[in-house]
View 1 (cartoon, chains in turn cyan, blue):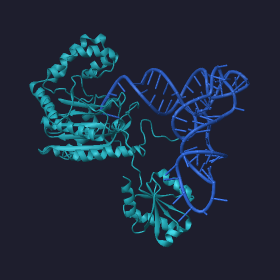
View 2 (cartoon, chains in turn orange, yellow):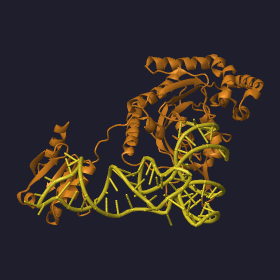
View 3 (cartoon, protein in one colour):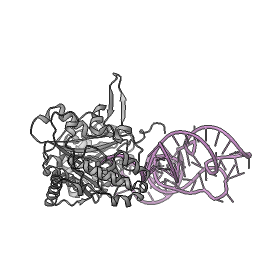
View 4 (cartoon, helix red, strand yellow):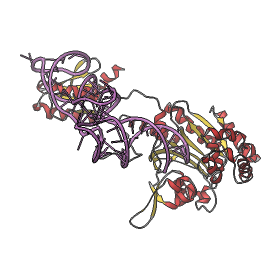
Amino acid sequence: MNLRAARGTRDVMPPEVDRWQRVESLARQIFALYGMQEIRTPIFEDSKVFEKGTGEQSEIVQKEMYRFTDLGGHDLTLRPEGTPPVVRAYLEHRLAEGKDVTKLYYIGPMFRYERPQKGRYRQFHQIGAEAFGSEDPAVDAEVIEMAMFWLKELGVESPTLLINSVGDQDDRPSYMEKLVAAQRTYLSDLSEDSRRRHEINPLRVFDSKDPRDHAVIEKLPTIIDHLSSSNRDHLDRVCGYLSDWGVKFRLEPHLVRGLDYYRRTVFEITSPALGAQDALLGGGRYDGLVQQMGGKVDAPAVGFASGLERIVLAMPDESLAPPVDCFVVTIDDSVRAAGLNLMWRLRHSGIRTTAEYQGRSLKAQMKVANRSAAPTVVIVGPDEVASGTFTIKRMSDGQQVSSGADSLAEDIRTLLASEG
RNA sequence: GUGAGCGUAGCUCAACUGGCAGAGCACUGGGUUGUGGUCCCAGCGGUUGGGGGUUCAAGUCCCCUCGCUCACCCCA
């Protein structure tokens, strides 16, 4: 085997692709109920979009980007996440200058150069949603509730919603001082990785999976206890709406996000059906990002991104529907053209139809039909062509009925329906 | 970037302390006229991931390399 999909990429083959289509179509359907509209941004952007948006110091920009110079000398990057391109488009098309709340969602591939493992690929796919232009906690709650509604309709296995607030410029700086000071006193008890986090991004110490760190983490001050009164109120109101709308969640003071732009509300939805990479979806409020990316004034915003590979992993197996309704078999070459003609008519009457194309025997054609999972077979032979009456066979029980060329589609539909 | 495990037929896997590469499933043909699935018969299918070494002899032992998987890390 010589050519293979590149490391960290994979083909989504039938029938798995049915599940992907279901995830996507249900997202479109449900997000529309919240007034969301789709945006399609380019797969690659000027690298500055991610340096300014994702953050120059972030792990993603530092070591995970598919970054290249094109033939014209432009510094470009395959998008590692969806939010910065959407913000860029939001600004480029002057949406920030109106007062309306803008709700956008996107579906598409993202790229990060990481070691592949369960639920983690170098090309992966996200569905994300962003709401710009309001700091009403109702919008935070609405976006979260929408995500939960969607996952519930998809039947994903026990999604768990975690919520926290990471504060903003009013309360975060003084909290960070306390946190760093506290971490410093326990420095020798922390793992090497957490000591590094302490230097680069102290909040992420809370994310450590190293058991040695857990004891220290328990003793560190949490931001939720140091929120300003207005940020505490914002969080309480988000939680209040969620409770009103029947969304179960857990307040998790240790929840932090990897991206630096989050302010106030952060949330994550996990599922036990996954491995170590158990976050199905994550997001939060990112007031300030619009301005940081060049907006004359800021537009507050809140959104999330979900990983499709992970959602599909967490979905239940469902019995797959047959890919066709009918299979046409022809007894010999003399009736081949008549058979193909019948197939053409069926398709134009809305019956999904296929046939065998290797010129094999009737028996072999029947085997192919059986393998195709087509629920019905139309048999075309010299007698049928002469009389204009064809035989429809229902594969589940072998029952056969005769039908004229004009009533064939209708009779197939009847047979399919009576099967239940 | 770090660590561990694993690479044998299309798939799932066998092959004792080194001794003729196998099975099941799948696939192809047949079991007498124009009917699939179950059953029976026959058949196709392999540089044992690749390269080197040790040996009379390597799927098996050693070295290198490539790939896959899981975890760390990162995050969706």
